[in-house]
Image 1 (cartoon, rainbow over the protein chains, first blue to last red):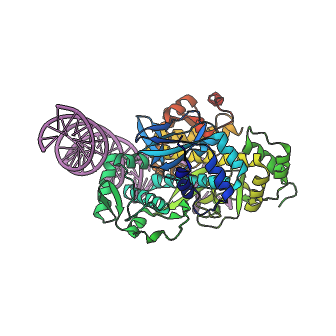
Image 2: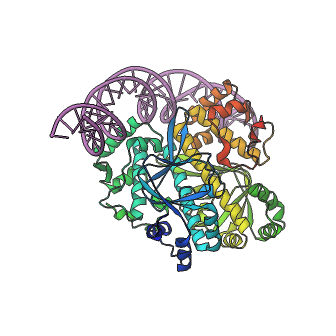
Image 3: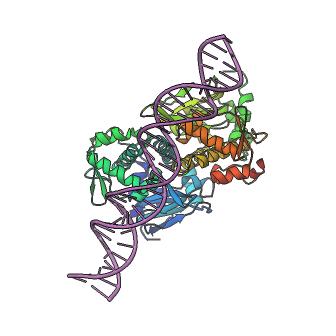
Length: 251
Length: 251
DNA sequence: CGCCGGTTTGAAGAATTTCAAAGGGAGTGG
DNA sequence: CCACTCCCTTTGAAATTCTTCAAACCGGCG
């Protein structure tokens, strides 16, 4: 537990709350609450489905995902968690992880015990509102995924995913050059979109050929935002980003 | 606004809170808050994606769904909402409906204005906790759907759906004779599971032939709970039912 | 009786998965 | 600095699942 956790927590708080200005009371209370900060290696699990949950997790940096393993051993990624997120809020009220949480990339994560988090919420309603709001955004994204996976063909599905990821990173101020600032393997794309790696590969090639995206190294770059939005029927309201509407100015 | 709303609200509250015993203060406050109760005809929309949201909805009776219309006009049902649910909690903190809400069957619904709901929550933390908890269960279900739709083949997908619906109704005490007490058309099953009607039809026939389900009239009856659970890889923890573990005694 | 919403069937066609193997790039150890 | 390995991407081709289209069927209801 490093001496100055605030250095790590302040930027997190900014990303977490976005527009909602917390008054300094809340901020101070939050920053003074003891947390444990850990670096998690890529591929490492943070918690497993069915585990007892006693603390909640704040993503300071990196990329996490919740996932579930199905039948023949195939994995379904249910959500991506970026810096500023709290991936395991559902467990706060159950004390039980309903799904597994793991780091896709080297990540920095803070843990706060449930009792501490609960008393923070109780004593600082504004903070509580932020957390609640965040949880509802996640729920909204999750529902959106149901639609994307359930009803859109491969090409559109991936287009939608890229739009979403870019929009989310962009809202955090982390996207430059129209590029999703973290790389995602095609296997991960496949696992999150409910398709096979092979098909992801071919669909991506198609998106590239149509000039909608480019690959700079391992990273996906949006070559034609309008086109990608159209291909994926992307309608960003469900993300409830602060920068609502400014978004299209991306590319 | 009928004279005795309490008559409708009391059973709802029982279903909503489940185990969590509210103290009578909270209960009284809730029951005294003015709500508008409406009957909604099957097929009627309650709110549309993008609409401003000024009140929240409690499902007293019937069956609702949130859905989204995609591309060529195909519909994706993102969630089913049974009696005891609050389908549009996400909108409470955004004032904007991210997805459409509609009645699949003739339903009875209560509306409470957002300001009233918010002050109820603020003044009655226990009630707030129930609501939060409910929202988290819904989120959990939604994630589960991502897995189901993304990674399970047709037969298993439907098996899982039937298990979930039965378990949820059963937990409300609404299921008798191992039967899902509300009928769902094959078109609705298709729209919720991201498949075509034709394929739903054939997969259902398969489930029937394998003796896992029966159809009594329009209703689905579980003929072999164990078998259905296995076919759908159903693992009910994510539903966070009070009757945790008692479930298998269903059939 | 005839319509209507929903189910069922057949058959062709498309999207997607699976299997199997090759290619590429970046890091590690010799 | 090369060789080797590991992880990821790419390719080919066959098999399968699933969708689409189109029509028949079925039970309830006006």
